[in-house]
Length: 219
Image (cartoon, rainbow, N blue to C red; front, side, top):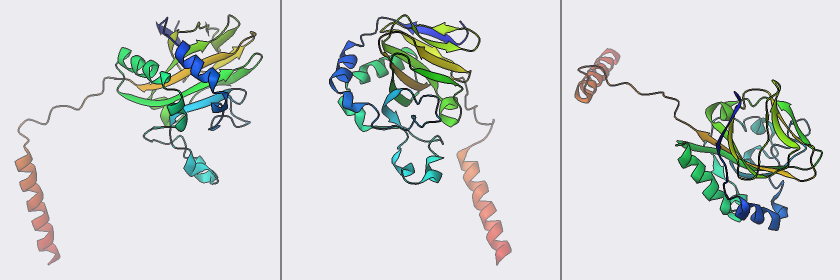
């Protein structure tokens, strides 16, 4: 399959699923992905980590910056779902992740869907995306326009290509619940060695000479 890759199975998701089951009030407390025109508007969300959404509340111009470059922060919901941390950081270790980005849970109830879309903007271009299935059924799936369909079982972990048009359906009779974790991976960019013969002392001396010349010209 070209758009997704299974990288693990059998992850123990039951402790996290139980924490979610016991605290249904956590769903949709930060509904930043659930606007009526958003492809995810039929889901329910629990945001664990992302850009602080408070500056955009009451200021739409600030809200337009929500996907700009940022350092992600933990949301309050993370304190109520401590079992998520082990899953997240075990995944970080497995893929040798360099930076943890956005983390959220979504629930797709029977008969609901995530509509076809491509992820765009700084965040999805900077990070890779991984899905950990907590609960699903044989009639739920993550699909692409090319016909590929990923059907997950609880404990399955997949990397997926979010820059290609994708969608999620749940035609079964139980909830489809997924933990999505965004991670920056090593893409091979490297800082080269310094030029032959360069030294910090030479750099300081050259800078001092330039500043002295500039001051002389001004006087």
